[in-house]
Length: 103
Image (tube, rainbow, N blue to C red; front, side):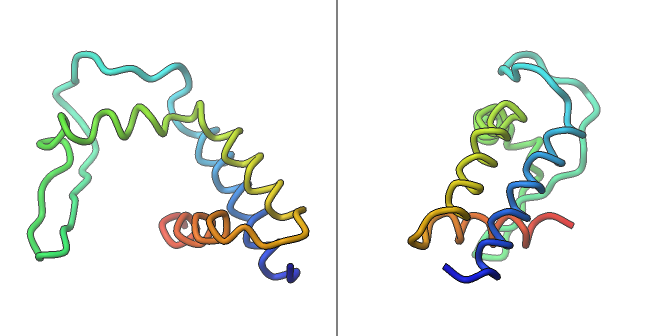
């Protein structure tokens, strides 16, 4: 595996951990909702949009599933992929998608 791919995987692992470190800590669970929320809009392939908060029944489980609690296992997977002899194409695809979404 090339050095550039290893660096991508390691950078993505660090990004996951940095994001988790500045997110609300704890065991995220579905429960009541607050009146205020960030502005997050889903852009669909057909050009339509929907405010994610308005679609919270569909997105809440996704948000809970990817709480900061999964950051360390994801980062560990990316680091293990960076050290592997063979390229884990799923890890590289995840790293690239993540880095494209994060500053």
